[in-house]
Amino acid sequence: MASPLKFNSVSSFVLLFIITFFLPNKGNTNEFELTPYIGSMFSSDLQSVDSENRLNVSDDLHFGLALAWQESKAGQGQILINYVSHQITDAQGEQDKFDLVYAHFSGIGHYGKRGYITTLGLGIGASYMKSSFDDGFYPSTTIAIGTRYFISKELTFVTEIRAYATLIKEEDNIFCDNGECLAVFEGAIWLDTSISIGFAYQF
Image 1 (cartoon, rainbow, N blue to C red):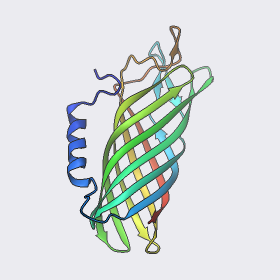
Image 2: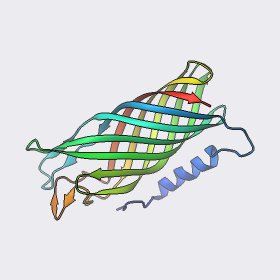
Image 3: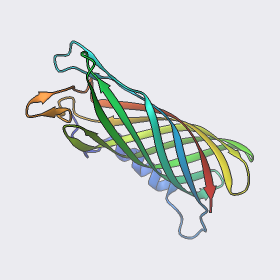
Image 4: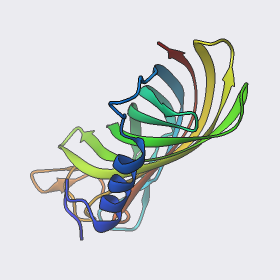
């Protein structure tokens, strides 16, 4: 079972693919793009310590910021930071806060004609999780599909559906303090899914 910051062979292959095809080429002039995102994040649930109950994790507003560079007519490299704060509710109705920050390096492919295109992205990075009890960094991957509507040469309206998969330990104690645990993860992969909109500014 994987531990924080230990990437498996699949993650290594994804990273190699991205580096090979999407790192900026120093021999070319790259156009850069800054995109603020906002949307809804839908999360996995947690499990009670006795495994009898599922603990609801709220669906919440998230905020993101991406820096991308145009490597070719059909692709971009991208660094994306995304933040969300979830609420955990136990069987007694008590609540606790659960914050996540996602940081990923991705390759973005563009498909379609000028004026409107479809995008497909694949990335690798890390997730920072923080509860009221503990925090930690974990390896994660992301995949996204979206659209781009060109408003002007510099401004583009962006829509996106994105999934995050974070590799964690089932016995992780991020929700524990002095042997007392609020919740545990249900499996070795934590999933978040987001629906987002944003405006990309090219400079």
